[in-house]
Amino acid sequence: MANYFSERDKNITARLRDLRNQLPECCEDFFVGIEPQTTTLTRLNYAYDLRIFFDYLLKNVRAFRDYQDVLDFTAEDLDKVTLGNLEAYMEYLSYYTFEGKEKTNAEKGKSRKISTVRTFFKYMYNHDRISQNVSAKLTMPKNHDKDIIRLEKKEVERILDAAETGAGMSEHQRKVQRNTQARDFAIISLLLGTGIRVSECVGLNLSDVDFETNAFTVTRKGGNQAILYFGDEVADALKTYIDTERKALIDRCQKMNVGDTDAVFLSLQVTRLSVRAIQNIVKKYAQTAAPLKKISPHKLRSTFGTNLYRATGDIYLVADVLGHRDVNTTKKHYAAIEEDHRKLAAQVVKLRPDKKDQ
Image (cartoon, rainbow, N blue to C red; front, side, top):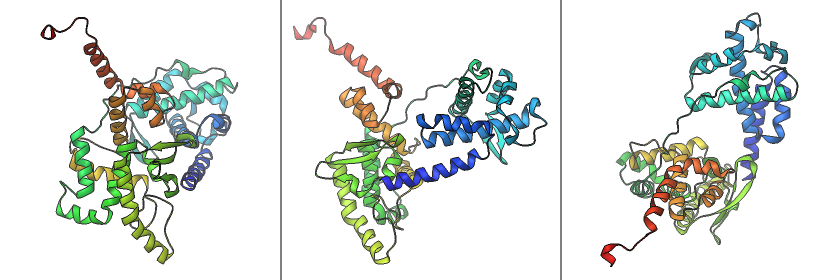
């Protein structure tokens, strides 16, 4: 697994370096300063967001109308940015053009980009690069909580049946599916049975799986590793895939001297499945099982978390298994189920015996 994630980090680092070269020199102190506390992916997202912010200043703020390029900005220029400029930027993020492409942002996207600007200004102010932090006065966009989309019990059964047998699929779909049926069923079973992230599924190597203990090692966000466990149903699905379809692919790979023999989940070209490939696999079977819902690997993760919480009532266990660093994140996602538990508690405690029991 380390190879996959190390290669991914190398690619992210290369993209980050390229983006940093497109930002004003004053941003370099910011990226160097936050490195110990942030992941490479977080800094890459900051770089994307700051490019959009400085592009906005260059093209829309009168104080900078004589500037020719984003690279012309200095730290002193940040003191010229007003609260009105930032409020206008927030509105601008709803719809704008960047690098010749039209862009839109809903509440979540706007919040992230504004949060990046506030983090940047706060850092520059705390390190005496600017004289005031005007972004501290900016009111963050209001986010409306959305109901978590998850699969119900019958839908879980249908998506597993579709992956295992092709149930509910067209004749053409079943014909295409035959070469990857065991693999697809193993992927759906693993996601539903363990709640791992799609990136963790992609990065899984055969050496990470121990069938004696039904355990496997995953690399979490930030690079930390954790040992998780799977049930017998998941074990059976994985073993069937590994012993049949995957073995046939590996045999072909060794004869041709090509491919990735470490990855658990392989394409027909004997390469490690990508995040996009697994997303498409889930989408394909979900369209049969729950056609009115937009189901992604993350929704299968939410389904697992919901089922685990309903079965145990232990929010700390759910947070630990899902790899949430802050249990409040878990509480926020499963607040509705927590309410169900409270209602159940009200019915469990009896003040007096029911009359029918007397």
